[in-house]
Length: 233
Image 1: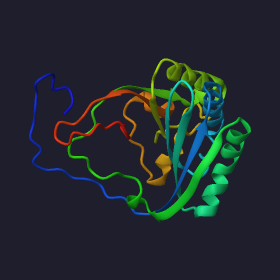
Image 2 (image 1 turned 90 degrees about the horizontal axis):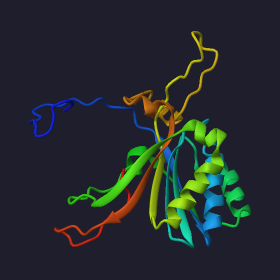
Image 3 (image 1 turned 60 degrees about the vertical axis):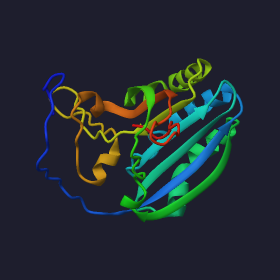
């Protein structure tokens, strides 16, 4: 419902969903470890520098940093349409090589090729996630023009006590035109082209490269007694 105001409610009695053709993907996963804040800053700057590497193959990606004022772990999960395991590793090799050159340690690189539906979701959590978070859409221009600002932002957040930062590439896909004629066309968020869709309602999503969520606090579920701070979008 949109525009109903506070306290409004409704009952859905019918819904229609479009179906999309299934396709194979390879899920590439890897952990990148750092031992100091300075290493983490360099790592996230490196990631920002390479974030456009995967546009040509329309990859989707989660990059989840958990850390402290010293060591941290960046867990990267990247989905490649139509590529096998070796080709997926080749797509990631430049980023991982530069991460290693900056002092980080690469661990647990693996690939899994299967139907997209088998790897893009998580099992339902009946009690949901209890977290306090904030999020920002990061424009493509930040990554292309000022990648060092991304690394410094992560360093500042960790130094202030933030323990978890989740980012993912957004679908986007809008064409940006310069003047009255299409002198310049930029496609942001190429993953949208996989299904031939474009669903970004908020104009900010159309020029965003990534959506970054800062997870600051969590608390236990009353039904299960477990504390859930994890994948939250």
